[in-house]
Image 1 (cartoon, rainbow, N blue to C red):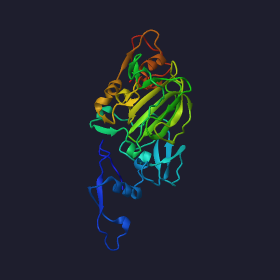
Image 2: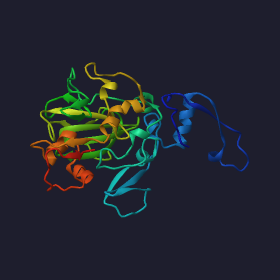
Image 3: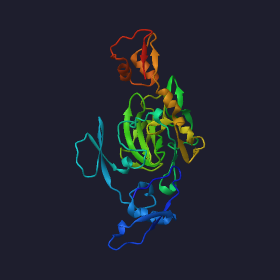
Image 4: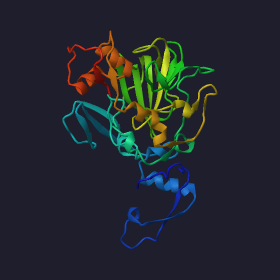
Length: 333
């Protein structure tokens, strides 16, 4: 039996009434008819007919672990006990890959694995960010009082800053913002430094950058407030802070649409996901060109636009040894 939420109305349940059993029909195969009903009866039914972790805090569910296969060139999902040749195996509950309409794949190396084209994003939906009744909790990622914002989401130094920078000292504890599972534990020398990506039940993913120490492992299921690591200033950073991002299907949006960091509060329980939420992404992903000036190098141009050097060389059919001409137009996106 699969369970689906109707957008934000996660607390509304259909009633389940079993018809009279027929002769020779096993109990577990009785027909089920939908009606309005009380919540307790519904949860009792869930405990025997679903493995949804959405209800693990209220129902004792037996869950199976599945092997997630990762390959640098693609994604393969192997059902439990099926042997395949792979480059890496991560033992996690398969519901983190197959459940919810938000997730259909898994990769523990890349931040954005969804390749969602914002131009094709037409529909809107409401995400319930937290609901303690169904094991969906939240917590501030740092425990300062008050929490100070060093740098906000938006354009910064000629490039987009896709998160909110929260002040801390090197070694301060960093916590998971919501219940979820660690999808990426990695290091980015020219960007995030030591960082995590955590996938959440509510459909979002969070990024935690510039850590000095990583404690959680890929595949660890974490509760809101569970320790991920310690803050620092690794990667592209000018001082100790936590770079914190919220993403939906790989697309970042302003965390302060959800958080009031000074008050240490979530400003809403339900978040409307729409094309307008990612307007900055659409603008940033438009084709962009740079006119070469004196002193420009491929490296400096790449840093200015926040793109890799090999992207510029590929888009322009040049190599890293190509001599740039003043006044030359280079496509960077």
